[in-house]
Length: 110
Image: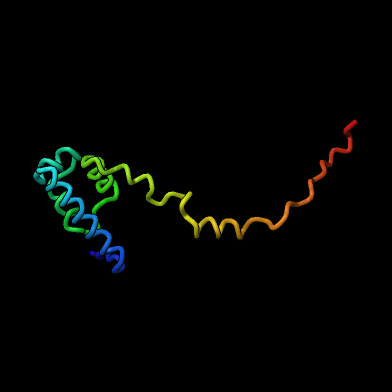
């Protein structure tokens, strides 16, 4: 069985997200069972998320953030309007000038 391994920086982000979710849960005075129930997931899955396990599904992360009321910031995640690098690459592939209008080859146009 092969084990999925994240690069160091994403591993740290996953661990940080888990810690933040745990802090948000504790601030609300909710147990693991409380939040798991609100999110419709298993307690072990929530514990894995809070521990920063990289195999936790992204859908679980989003659902838990929704259950905590922290989902409003998710709209900014990977927003194409804020992807400056992607926009620059796209712009570099555009034609530099507009081409000549193409003439229809309909010789029978009266």
